[in-house]
Image 1 (cartoon, rainbow, N blue to C red):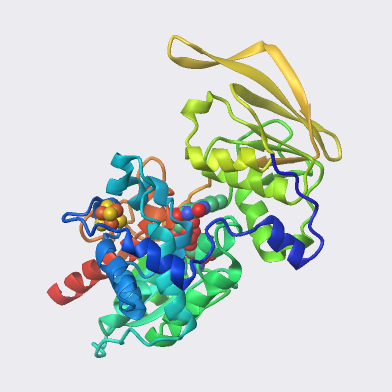
Image 2 (image 1 turned 90 degrees about the vertical axis):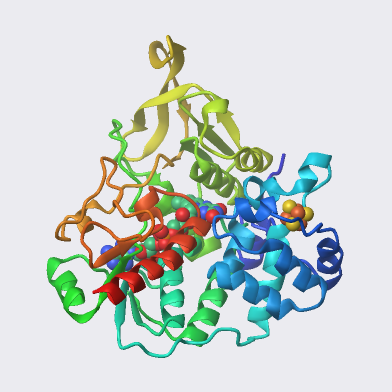
Length: 442
Ligand SMILES: Cc1cc2nc3c(=O)[nH]c(=O)nc-3n(C[C@H](O)[C@H](O)[C@H](O)COP(=O)(O)OP(=O)(O)OC[C@H]3O[C@@H](n4cnc5c(N)ncnc54)[C@H](O)[C@@H]3O)c2cc1C
Ligand code: SF4
């Protein structure tokens, strides 16, 4: 079990958040690419939401055509570099690799992908061209993976594109949410700069779209609008004492960590509420920030957690303790958090019940709620005829990504309720085909 020293400098922060998937060197890439069997109907390709031609890009690496390899990757996935590092490859492409059937380690597809794209970005190779101007304009709301992919694809087809972004930095949760041991701020920004330099889409930062007047202006000025707004802040869980100082949402905690790194002070005792991947990340991050005791508390059994096993294992190997079958019933403390009162839970006739006769307190100085993000309902309410489902997820035509207001298209977390970077990148790219077909039919 790891024990981390509280980081006080950038170097110490980087040491505690050492990259999980380090870059391959040329020899490693040559050797690893030689192992690929270049399967016909390759299962790895089927398992990739963007269907990158994986055997082709691996072959290109092996024949020293690294730039061609990067082109193969970006042609399918505009976030190809980030996805090589942040994708849960073990349950996607690498999980499907035929080697798994022979008890042999699968090809390290993510690291090979990252090798090709990173080398190409660092060498500033020009591999994309802007399409012949078609006189039409697309407004993109949000510069997350969905918005960036939409902008890139639209530029290759000759559209003018402006992205409106609420924050100061691009790339949405890839920059503000993904754990720093998966991808660094520099790596995220490097890819966006590279794409932007070649494709020339504009990003207007600090430009939140939050009024009917702004939306009407976009509707007048642009031919189509793409909603890539993701999800909102951590949702309220309506728990007694939730407003006490020292209770924070996971998304807000991670954003601060990504922006301020070692300057964030994490206290000694932390309780994390939740059982999804975000809960695992935030628990592991708290431990890496030097907290002495981090307790991950989940209301059901380990097997019912939403988190991937590898994310749980990573949290545990970072020194995190876990408590299963407990539900928080109150946050304890006056001026600031002193603990969380839990009750045990148990399954009774297939339903999870709280046992109020079995109640106890876990002392802590910080409570992190990793219990899900709120949706962007207040924005959706401003858009005429935009329909959302009962979970405030935007309804789209699955083939065209068009919403119930024909001028608006949408993708990413806004339409799937929260998935991965690769899904958002796919949606943004495919939505442009929907926009293009709609505008050309009009
Ligand atoms: C803690 C955490 C860890 C994660 N880790 C991983 C991981 O390891 N691997 C992985 O593949 N996925 C991970 N994900 C999921 C992944 O980050 C998201 O699925 C993906 O970023 C969604 O992309 P998006 O473009 O739909 O939305 P987002 O990335 O959320 O981007 C939305 C953008 O829109 C902007 N915006 C919102 N509203 C407005 C507005 N009204 N006006 C202007 N701009 C606006 C936001 O500021 C933001 O930049 C993680 C998610 C979280 C929360
Ligand atoms: S399944 Fe594995 S061996 Fe086959 S093409 Fe994909 S990466 Fe190569």
